[in-house]
Every structure is written in C-alpha cells, then in structure tokens.
Image (cartoon, rainbow, N blue to C red; front, side):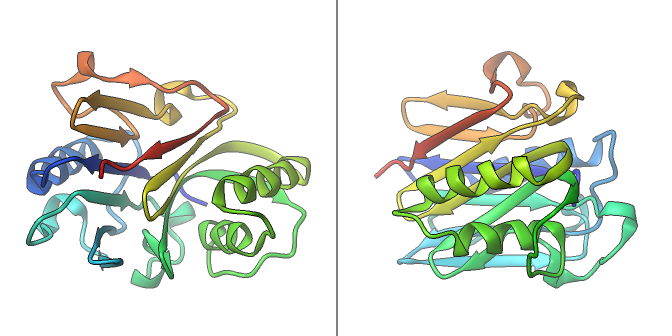
Length: 218
C-alpha cells in the first residue's frame, strides 16, 4: 500500500491543467512523505481515458495534457518500503471507462486478491464486486474489507467513471496527513490530499469515514 497524494478536478469550462498540476507538484515536493516514485494522470476525453505515467517525480516531469481538459485525475506515488518501483504500479489505474487512484495502508487483509500491489488488488476487488453500479460496489466491498483487515492506517481513494468521481476517505489517525480536502466554485470542483500551497483558506477538509459521489460538470 502507499501513502501517496491524490488530485481530482472537474470543470464546467476547459481548465488550466498546467496550473493544477504545478500546484500538485509543489505540494508533493514538500510532502512529509517522499512522493518521488513516479506519478500519473488521466483525462477523460472523447469517451475514453487518456493516461500518462512515468517514474519521474511529478515536480521534475513537466508533463501537461494537451487540448481541452474538463476532467483530470492525478496521483503521485510514495511506494511502500520503496518496493515495486515500476511504471505499471503507478496510478491512475484504468479499466475500461473507470480510473482509480489510492492513498493508504491496509495491514493483515484476510482476502484472496489478485494484483501486483495493494492498490491494484483493491481496484480489482471493487471491479469484480457484484453490484448495480460503482456506488453500491464500493459500499459492499469496503464493508468486507473493514471486517477482514487487521488494521487500516488509511484507505482513501477516488474511483472515476463517466459523469462522476466516487470519493472514499477513511483513516485511523494522522488526520493532518490523510484528510482529503475540497475546493468548490460555481464552475469547478477540486479534491486533493491537501490544499494547494498558499490557498489553505479556500479549501474545506472532508471528514473521516467519508463517502460521496461528486458529479462532473456537463
């Protein structure tokens, strides 16, 4: 599992993706946990996810999606015990029309799950859970994960699918690090692991044990 940083943005008009990613890079570079094991981002455009992943730290890479961007999901990786540093392990993960970014640590999970990393296993478990949509799948899957996990340090994730972000926040402590934050305006919603540097007063902290569907602007 990982103690990474997450970012999700939905905008009514084409956003300044560079500004968002530069702010994200600054907060990752100054994070108390090293966030330099690579990063990735995905934009939803023309009915599919366009993804960029690299092992270069986000503050060194400089990649910015070209063209109009109205939906953005980004993730900077802090690998557990510095293990599995391969680009295939970098998020966002994409499966069909869903994308997934995770931040947290689960210890002693008594479930037979498939995947290269803990985050990949959780995404696969959410995907295979029989339910009428992602919202129900998250509820059913996380109910089982809670019962069969010895200790949850944190389990924050954003599952994106056409029209919405599913935001899940849960942690057992270290609220200063694991609390997700949201900034809302009439034309844009941003979810991030922490406020952008210099904008602390513009963001609201999301409570622990938080689950919400955040609609995309159309």
